Image (cartoon, rainbow, N blue to C red; front, side, top):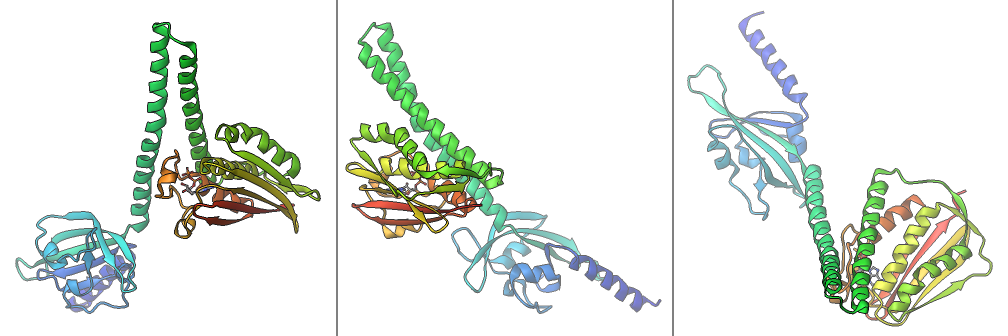
Length: 361
Ligand code: ADP
């Protein structure tokens, strides 16, 4: 093998090596003109080909968090040692934006000429990791914020009760303080239940036992559970049960959790009036609905209420505690139970959440 053949072989080896990498690799000369690239680089840059010799900024157009374009050539040429960033983004021609990992390494290319050098760039799409990170950060911030209020109220109420006990004060004031602390503890418990159901639903390890549910007993039982909460706000709950109702075969745990979410929301977001729970027979299943005469949901918000953490900006909503997790969990459970949810709502008038459960066997 002569020298040229050997060089060619070396070159082919190098090419197959970088082409086998899943990260995008681009190497440039000292002026930032492209010498070499691999297939993964085309994928991450979302282009069909790269012209060798072209300047790097013609293919790699990066932007920052504020979507401002950055001078990529200068960033590269000014790198004296290996620099790694996870904060750059690339905007594709269709307008979508991805987050990238970008490593810039100044290297000596060693093609004969002394002092010859260049840069090797490694580019990876990290949008998924970034969105998980953002979701986790948002999750922690929302949860800690939501936990703080009930804990502060409960703590205040308990210390108030202690103070009154020490001073041998009025027993009804002590009772009120303890009641307030108790209701906050219940709220915390509900929130933790929501979180644990969500985490189990996301990991897909929920109970999946299908049971025969007597829909009439089921709804009457819901009334027993929530009647008191409604009454304490001056609301009345009415039942409207189809006499021809048959047994529903579904996962009771899901049906229960979903209906509880609809009812607790109806109570929470209804300052005055009433709530109607209906159950009617449908083809191969049961449709339940919870209607309220509450604050209602704007058209814009209706599209988002099932998103994780979504809570309306409306001040009536913000007067109530909430995590924005309930309906998100509800939608996940509905999917597992093959049930279909519909929402009808008008601002200031009220909302109806309906759900059609099919028989699962
Ligand atoms: P949370 O009640 O904890 O805020 P949910 O996921 O249960 O979270 O609900 C999301 C949002 O949907 C609520 O913050 C509220 O804006 C809106 N919403 C849900 N149910 C009702 C209802 N019955 N009436 C008015 N708004 C509602």
